[in-house]
Image: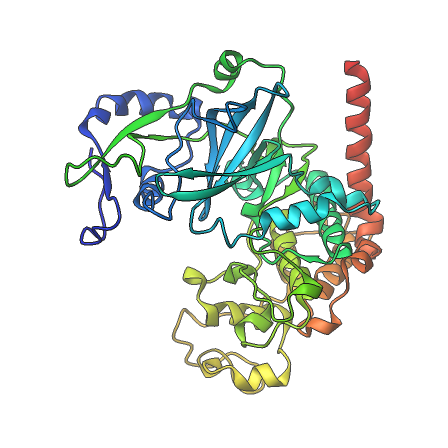
Amino acid sequence: MLIPIHNKDQLTLPIFSVTTHFDPFMPWLTRHAHQLKIHTTLNQMLNIWRTMCPAGYHPTLIGDTFCGGRYTVVHKLGFGGYSTIWLARDQQRQRYVSLKILTARESPVSHEVKILQYLMKSDLAHAGKRFIPPLLDQFSFDGPNGRHQCLVGEPAGVSISKSKEDSGNFMFPADAARSTATQLLLGLSYLHANGICHGDLHLRNFLLRVPNFDGLSTDELYKRFGKPCEVPIRRVDGKSGEPHAPPHAIFPLALSMPANKLDNPEIIISDYGTSFIVPQVPSPTHHTPALYAPPEDFFDEPITQPTAADIWTLGVNLYEVLGERPLFETLAWDQDGIVGEMVNTLGKPPVRWWNSWANRSEFFEEDGSWVADFSRINTPVFRRLHQRLWDMGRGETEKTCEWDVAGGELHALEDFLRAMMTFEPAERPTADQLLGSEYMAKWALPAWERQERQKSAHTTEER
């Protein structure tokens, strides 16, 4: 089976395709995919191999050891734009850990170790500390593609994004969604209390904790989750990819955590590669995906309130955490389309942004109404935040809605999100102020506290 190959002329990059040896394996994979729950496509993985070259990813294999044999790789957990993440056995402490191996290019510029070490030293007593991943160890090593930094942490499960994708209705149960929103806000409050701006908050960076499986041997782990699925690969020019790339691809561990089946989700806020200590960075930049980015990013204003940018970004995320779909919906994340959705949802922005928006006339008249000859799509209708809360998948009438409409939850949620998404950065509330909001006090925090009591009772029963 051949995979479409792009950029064949870029000879500095190893270009790969799947070998014909994989063909007999395909019927088996097709029959058992529902059991293995392999979510990663071969095309995505080929994109990783294409950058397995000097300065790129390290060609990790099952059975590789690090730190003088202390860490033995037993499975793959996942990968991102700047790292691959592996499940390893810590032979010294007899436990499982995650190894986040950064690309050689990213290793010298990533802030993640610095930020996590800074937070580990913090003696601040705060409920949100538990939602930040501990840094168990860190080391660097030399490989065929350069020098790589490796962060050792606790294994985590899938992202909230993947969990929602795997669920039947793309949503957590209502109380689990409230609890998740609380955990994320508590975690952000802890970061901000320590002077840290995350700078890249989105659903793929919010991970779900997994039950502890340190007591399982490697063989028992494979019996429960399956052995690593390895697929042979080769360069299209017939040359060997080694030593820069491995001879086969490894699919991630088959963890299934559908959101609609999770009554007591526990959250970890991950990925601090672009985070920073606010007082130390006078001119910061954010790396948030456009759909979640604050409006100041779109109008090229200096970020003078970096934690306020985090607040906006979390607000956009929380709408999606609490419901089934993103708050802003555009084709291909078009930046003008996103700004149009902001205006559609929240009203006109400050005059300086309204007047400087170069393509505004393609969307709106001067008074804020839609232009008559709207050419991008059919003439849209206004859907303000209030309407979008009814459209988030929790029921569209007071009788069917899962929120406590009669008790005022929907109104409180609207006030909560609208405050987070105030256009002016200086006018957005802090995370601590939001924790004291009516929505948090009456609905979200109590949901999290109920989850904590249930978990405590379950732990007591097991003993």
